[in-house]
Length: 76
Image (cartoon, rainbow, N blue to C red; front, side, top):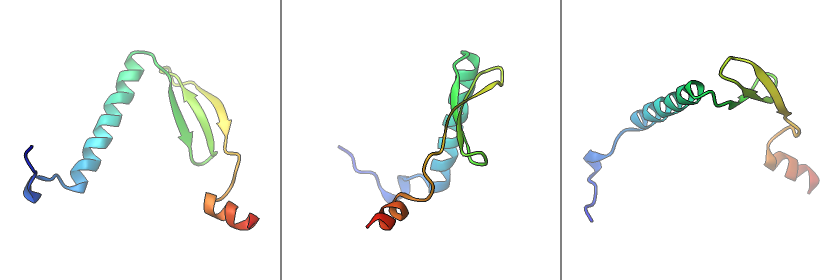
C-alpha cells in the first residue's frame, strides 16, 4: 500500500468543483432519461418532485422550525 504525500492531495476548491460537476452531470442524465428529481426550495421551505418537462409537484412541507439543538434545549 502506497501512502499519498501531501503534495499529491487535491485542494478543497478542486473537491468542490468536482462535486458540483458530478451533480450537474447526474441531473442532466436524469433529465435525459425522464427520471424525476427531488428539489428543496428554501424560499417556500417545501420539497418538490420536478419532472423533466419542468412541472413541479409538491411532496412535503417543512414541519419543524429551528435547529434540532434549539428544539431540544427548549424542552429541557
